[in-house]
Figure 1 (spheres, rainbow, N blue to C red):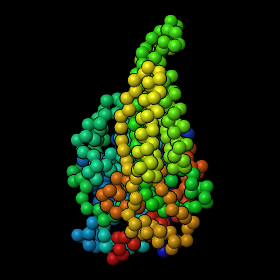
Figure 2 (spheres, rainbow, N blue to C red):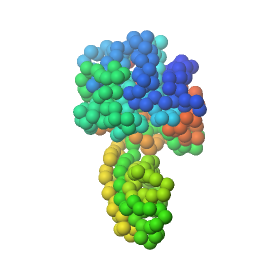
Figure 3 (cartoon, rainbow, N blue to C red):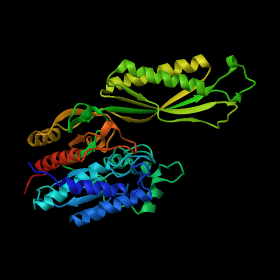
Figure 4 (cartoon, rainbow, N blue to C red):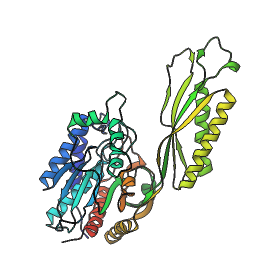
Amino acid sequence: MLKINGERLWASLMAMAEIGATVRGGSCRLALSEEDKAGRELFAQWCREAGMSLSVDPIGNLFARRAGTDPDAAPVMMGSHLDTQPEGGRFDGVYGVLAGLEVVRRLNDLDIKTRKPLEVAVWTNEEGARFTPAMFGSAVFTGIMDLDTALAVRDIDGISVAEALQRIGSVGERRLGGAVDAYFEAHIEQGPILEDNAKSIGVVSGGQAIRWLDVRVEGMAAHAGTTPMPLRQDALYGAAQMIQAVEALATDFVPEGLTTVGELSIAKSSRNTIPGLVNFTVDLRHHRDEAIAAMEQQVREHLQAIAGGRGLKVTISPHWISPATPFDTECVAAVQWAVDGLGYAQQTIVSGAGHDAIHLARFCPTAMVFIPCIGGLSHNEAEDVLPEDVRQGTDVLLNAVLARAGQA
């Protein structure tokens, strides 16, 4: 079994982390920002040095290609993303991109040619921190989302995706989609399971279902000092009760069911005014589609009942739905074969987070490789990993990809 150059990969990760570095040791490279542009340019420089050709599609996805000996073969693709959360870590996404680059570098070191071409993809806006929904670069590539719809999305400052792409010079001419033989993505787990079980590798069987809901609670704004409590239609107190109900609902779906309220806003808030309009988000997750459908139904019933009891109006709108996604059995088997051959401690795991691989799995055969992150912490400046886990995960990626691509 082959092994990568762990020191070189770690040095590349640390160099990329300097772009958009935060004061507490994390990274901030929001999608299509100047920092994201700089990260893409550094990656592109490294790819050219590795003898790869570069192309960009109309949604800004960046592809680096290493030719295979069969000019008619579809590529085996690796990748992830370089954009981060506003106070993100140094490894979420970027590890998968640079692990793919290290696979190519190591094959170059060993003068190993593959029959099928290899490509490393940098997907646009995976995080969804600047533009929503998340992962729309891979969604547009795979045809799940229309290009014009994505280009029209605007950030909080009113800048559209189309404008942001123009600003950083990432509007490309490569056609969307195209044949892909298989897709492999290496990623940090972003949770505590592997670390808690003392495993270095997660063989990912698929991704769990995700549903995002937008909730609008309408009451009546009124004076805080002159309106008796029994006569109030306080949208914030109602929303607070609703949020507690969303949290309590998760106990009916343990251990896989997860509920989160990540955003809350009070319209035209004032210290001495009863809130009349509140908006908040709900994030539901479960391994099974039928269970997450039941979770959503319960959310709707509970929130409507609370609104009715308080004289409020609640509107619940779907924002984004991602069904449970099994990965390709042959690609998962290739990852399992690689980790078994290398003898690394491993377990099968379901991805709790959304990844570009979830979209790719509906487009081509797909698998993922997870490595632990310290304390299960991610989307945080303190996010960290062990260099040995980084190396072992990329060893697995290298051998699985080479098995799929075929040694010439």
